[in-house]
Amino acid sequence: MKLSKASIALTMVMTTGPAGTLLAQHWGYEGEAGPQNWGKLDAKFAMCASGKNQSPIDLSGFVEADLKPLKLDYKAGSAEILNNGHTVQVNYAPGSSLAVDSRAFDLKQFHFHSPSENKMNGKQFPLEGHLVHADKDGNLAVVAVMFQEGAANALLTRLWEKMPNKAGEKSTLPTGLSVSQLLPKERDYYRFNGSLTTPPCSEGVRWFVMKKPATASKAQIEQFFKAVGVANNRPIQATNARAVLQ
Image (tube, rainbow, N blue to C red):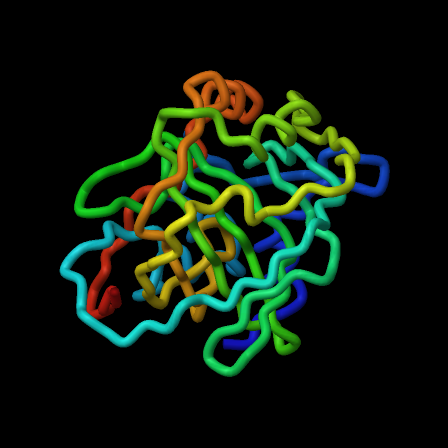
């Protein structure tokens, strides 16, 4: 699915202005602007209500498939970390990619949700990371990783040192950080077709969810939640006729 530049911008949650000030936002996770009303807030968000392949989902009923190992070519390249009021996001420098379906998807950014948006056989995790990629035609692919409470994640430690605690703020990150440090050592994954989990909820997104969770410390999870100030997970959507491959 080819998405417009506007949709890709929303996917990247680019909601800060040139000076780092927060732009007007009319959707959120609570009250009248919450997920149950996203489809009514703007005609461009209609898919949030009418879509049949929406994300997140409860991954279950798995279908055996010949899934090839993901070809991840992640280089050190984080550039800045920002708090946009919806999440904490790291905008990644060009040069890292995911190769799948005979396409190259460039890593654009990664961000987090607490608690997790997707579930696995009904289990929800305290934190989920989304690595957002786009190919040259605007098609999107997301690599998702769950975090369970345990040992501190080394990359999160370095990111959170620079994490802005107020919406609209951003910080420059030191060089030499690699997103590969977020992922578990075992890279087996589930695959399904889905959507963005934020407005405009555009469909046609390839989802690759790591089977094995990584770990994050209780303090790291709490620090993220405090910075965002709200549970920023969209509720589970109907799987409908989709297959979840493993």
